[in-house]
Image (cartoon, one colour):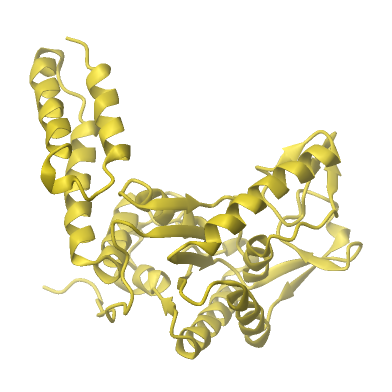
Length: 320
């Protein structure tokens, strides 16, 4: 019995390998994907500016330019272009922190093989005092803001400007977040996601180095049952995230990286196992075998430092 509406995804013309350098930015899907990629022998930077939902906010963050317009709330300073991860008690400290990260991101981006961008919503908030759209209202008075829906043309134009600043060799993986923004309203959310999807379709067909991954379509079509959602009925649960990740890997990983991913997944499952106290010796022996295997000749070309460090740490903490 076929219980889901599945669909094929065309193979990507450019594939990640075990030496790829990847930047992942945007909404929650970017965080999930980046976190999973970081467990593999890749060089990964994930959500350096925190969660960002609107295409304009992501582009501004990637531009490296930091506005000096700030908000003050309850004795703290926050930046309207960035997540509340960036908070300081002085304006100078906040701007220094953001500029430091922006400098690191710019350097990383210039040498990245892949940039993963996840758009979350086409709605933005226009600050009438600053005369600009912002990424985060930071609980400032509602009368400051005007909610606006960006048009497809505006999103495409903004993305084209961003793309012109990236190296021509950089491959961009563009996705639309499968998380519904129900606070905008269900009908409004559909309009928002549709605008993002049309814009993504236009740019992925216009530029050879831009590739669309259908995370949104997988969630709403293949995984449309609510058993694939968290209790809030909005966010994909772990099973759904695992499924979307498997589809992503099958499309964007080369053959060697797919083999590595399966092996690494097996090792992480072993690391996550909590044995009965009577089986601690056996568990430690298994971990020692894994660590020895990671040092074998067949893995010499691969950076095993991250996972070997996890295994060594677990061996150290497995007391007998």
